[in-house]
Image 1: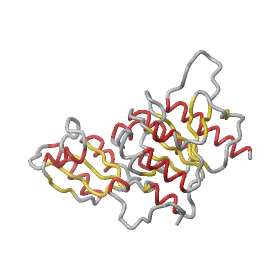
Image 2: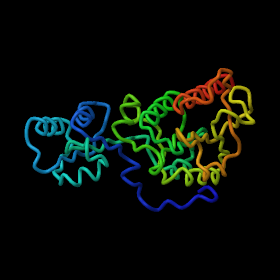
Image 3: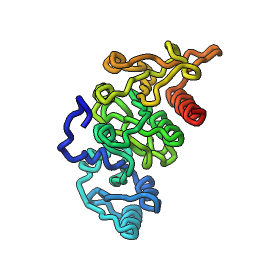
Length: 260
């Protein structure tokens, strides 16, 4: 076990194993996708008609259990009472695991992205898609302070969210502490900094913090950051959208790995 790392004696939370999708169409799409493993479907009691029958039949074909629960329980688990339509499904995310488990692994990721306060689902989804395409080893998506991994995120990732190397923890500050304890220097991606992204020296093993859309990197995380990494922007624009900035970072890291 790495120095400073807490002992992991408890079982991973279901939130560290599944992505929950809700609404009739997303659930049917998950059931119809042969590449996805659906753990279970929850259907609100009292739902009848063609829609629920279609879901039950699709689940039966895939061998997925359908559990009838109260409409209130579906709303609570979905976290979105207006759009759950009385149905949700837990989809297995095979590469999702707790951050602590990833850091204890013999094959711990060399590069890790840490999302800090990114609340727009489209941005989170696009970052997951881009980072996965670039082969980034881990993307920390805290349970608090970041957009929930819901159908909006899945849609923005074009389905890649199910297979992304998502690492889970409580908050971005907790993740920053764990990464530092495990020996990862942290760099915040920004518009200015001592290190230029394209020409500055960057360690092979590091964590990169992507701050929120309005407030940037939080104070709690900023105090643990070793340096800022700047994307040069000669045009008259102050900053990039966080998902666009993440894409620049990810593929600059790819370029460096190929050149090295």
